Image 1 (tube, rainbow, N blue to C red):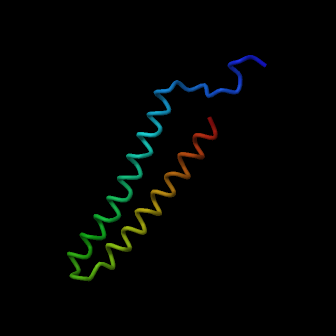
Image 2 (tube, rainbow, N blue to C red):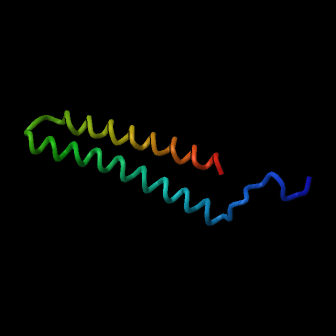
Image 3 (tube, rainbow, N blue to C red):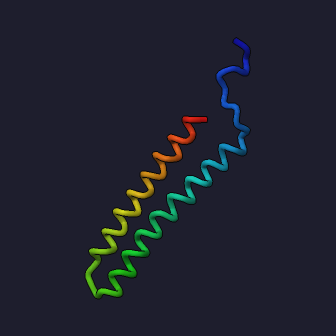
Length: 76
């Protein structure tokens, strides 16, 4: 077994790209969920119920994104 076997084959910039992509996806998921909830609350003149629902949906989408990116990274 040589010294290079078992190491990550990707260059360091690829790791930064994955981290940037994941952070961007997480931020967009939560912002869209909360923003959609705020818009629904203002349109329907309700208390923060839709904001809370949007926040839960955004966090759920972010968790799914983490799972999906991790699954794709493990395949490589």
